[in-house]
Image (cartoon, rainbow, N blue to C red):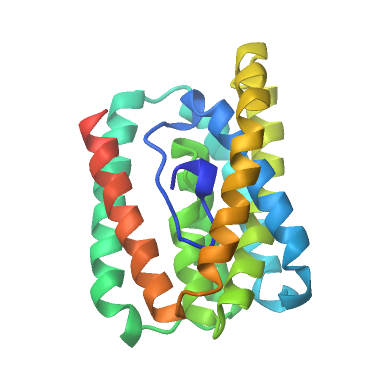
Length: 219
């Protein structure tokens, strides 16, 4: 989503950068989700989280190692197509689909999320689809997603730093943008508390489709 608002009350955005181009976005996303995770911790159910999170960390590590060997323009186009197809499918069928928080489901979604995170700096869609499907309230969804991205983005930041994707220039841009991100968190929280869960789901899928189109256009 932009990685800047990967998970917030108003939904999921889209980042049209692959991992090797997205250092500043990842750092800003980290600020966003750490604040959110702290705010929503009381709604967190670790049984729905720990497997998908561990799988994501392992798969994303190897994906970050591989991304520097793959053409970035091709990755952006693939990302765009995937986001559009996923958003269309779940926009129309999300009400008929329920993904239980079972080990196989978490394993599958964590694997896809890890690959997308490592290649595209876009681990959000598979995880968000899972969280939206297995939760009954906005608060539980946001708590799961925020903690997932808080821990996951922390690990991804470490992986990218170790592989040279986070530079001094990236860090300077991050420091300049942090105040705007914090302000956005406050606005997003206010909006999300007034939004029904059904509408929230549709907004998430719409943002994913827009992100896919932008990824293809700017590839």
